[in-house]
Image 1 (tube, helix red, strand yellow):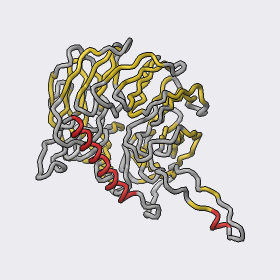
Image 2 (image 1 turned 90 degrees about the vertical axis):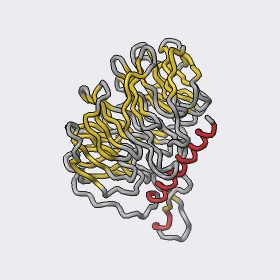
Image 3 (image 1 turned 135 degrees about the vertical axis):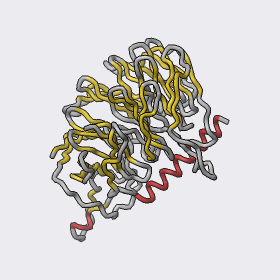
Length: 402
């Protein structure tokens, strides 16, 4: 059954990807007009392996002490200076990487395609330990001072000792027949970790024992087909003050207390995590509409529909703006106040220059074909700008301003 669920999850992810790319991958698609003067300039860009291409992955860079730690799907792990992009060290672990990177003091954590979790040294990338997980982990892991918490695609959460990778406990949630292949990192609190599951539930697990302390339903399976009954919580839950926020596919965006009591719920179907800033919650819906909710009441503040069909990723706050990347390689900048488009930047590689004899200059340029130049990975906001990891394997630092 586990293999059937995995296969179904992969098939559904591919189906969703095809549907999104079918709408968003047309080079001649008319872009919505810009209503502001926000700028976006590339500070540096570096090639990191071949990139994920069409492969499903939630790899994203991590930053600690002005150092960027990043990984490529083919096994390359690097450390770079944040300000300049200069390489401090680089290693190849000779195995495909599915999830990460999580950086925690002197340790890096990445999950591999064989269902193992590797802990590396931040000093030089040397492997510290490797632990076997119940299945593949496509999301980055979470951690506290003593343990690492990994959620795998089979509906399990495993706690491991940070010192040696020894398993402390494992919790298994019931899995539906069909699920979206994806999970979010657990949210680590003082006494519990909060995890979203494919059942549509948000569950708080005791950090010591791994047993449920409370659960809240974000989505109720409803419909004639298994596709219609999908209610996965694929994004990471987030917290502000003492309120936890999470969203589900075919479900609701929800605010709950640390004890699991619902404060408010609003209908909103999403694969991504909420973003919190300026007293508002920002969310990319499954149809690429971006919506803002009041964090206290859940009331809708604004809705931006101009980017529908462009295959948007997760929205990220940067200064007083929001940034979101799409399947064509654009990063769009929006106002946090009312959602209007303020700027954009195309980050696709330059076209290949080909000289044809006795032909005008205009014919000497053609686009590179056969590669995915979109951006699926979440943007990472830093003190120096936005880190962008493209499907073609470029890691880019983008400086934004207005």
